[in-house]
Length: 281
Image (cartoon, rainbow, N blue to C red):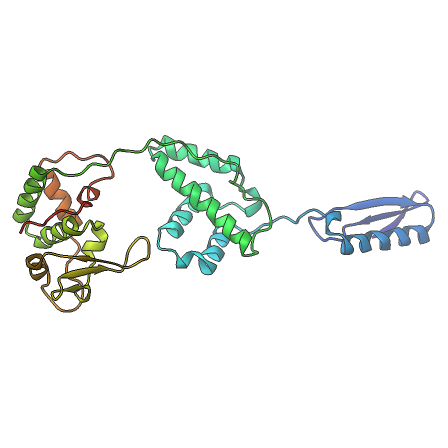
């Protein structure tokens, strides 16, 4: 606007709208004020550098949902669920209030509560990847707010595998379980090196008798893989022609590990099965 104050004409405008640069200048004559006002407005239209990037007042959860709809739903990980949990824990701030300090304060609180360094590193990686993808898709026009945050250095835990005698003890404990599917899934995992979830969720259509072969389709990498089986094991596992072969039985497996007296590193309960070994019925 242009107003007259103390014998001078004052120009006070924000041509870029709310949140943009404000321009003020006074003139002795009104025509000069009008001319300068027109010139400034033209500069802002022609040169975006004349005005700062507007605030992004969208909430973090809104950005997460945009990312999920455009990209995240194609992923096979738990990234979406983890991002929503992080969003709740950090207070769902507006986008322009999400800073490296805000995230690192949240991270410190998580560690104080006993959350592992691996877990907070994973949350950090998910958040950083989300903003990178939003920027590539044209839905984020600022710097990645956690780009400069370094992840914690974590020493790798040595992988543990079961010995022959430990496998015998585990299988004996599983035979005692009323949930026989835990025994079957364990045999399948031992024979093929599969993840527990892959073996437990196997459908009958992907286990053939002739030839004895199992095909995993719902894999972490997203690629199918086929593994030959011993004939007697294939016959034993193929209890139906369609549908899931096993019911959920991870709890029964965990209980059998305890009964067998196996002491395993944290986070490696079922991973100790991921080494191809001949199955013993």
